[in-house]
Length: 219
Image (cartoon, rainbow, N blue to C red):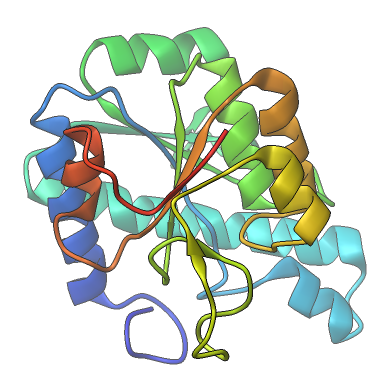
C-alpha cells in the first residue's frame, strides 16, 4: 500500500516488479507468496467480531487481489508469470498443484502463490514455508520493512540490536515475532533456511541472489 493507509499503490508494486525482474534475469527460479494485509487481515477481522474462519477466507481473497496486481506489474516489465491459488477460482488463477508449479519454475516463469495454504488459521508466513518445502526451495526470503531480525522492535526501540545470523531455536526461545512461530518451527523441522531483509531498499533482492550478506539469516 506504499505511503497510503489502504489498498494498492501502483508505484510501489511497480518498484517490486522491477526488483523481482532483476533477480529473474540472473536465472533464479522464484516463487512468491503474497500477503493481503493492505486490503484485509484475517486476525483483524476476528477482533472486529467476524467469525475467524470467515475472516481468514476474506484475507485469502485479499491475497488473490494482490497476486493479480503483482502479476500485472511483472508482465508489464516483461516477466512471464503464473498465478496459482490454494482456493479454486479457475477464471482468474490456476489451482495449486505441486508438479504444475515446479514445471512453471523450470520454464522460467515466476510463480505467485495466493490464498495462503487454502486453510484458515494459517498465516501467509506458514504458506510461504509450506510452498517452499513442497517445491524444494533453497531458501525462504522474507521481505519486510526492516533490515533484519532485532532483539526488540527497531521501530520502537533505538537501542535494538540486529542479528546477522540466528538459529531457529533462538528465534523461538526469544519470542522474536518476525515470522509466526508455526512458520519458524516448520523451517526448523525441514532444514529450510530463512533470510529476513528490507524489501523496500532498492537492490537488496539482487544482492541476496548474488550472495551478499544482506539482512538476517536463520538456520
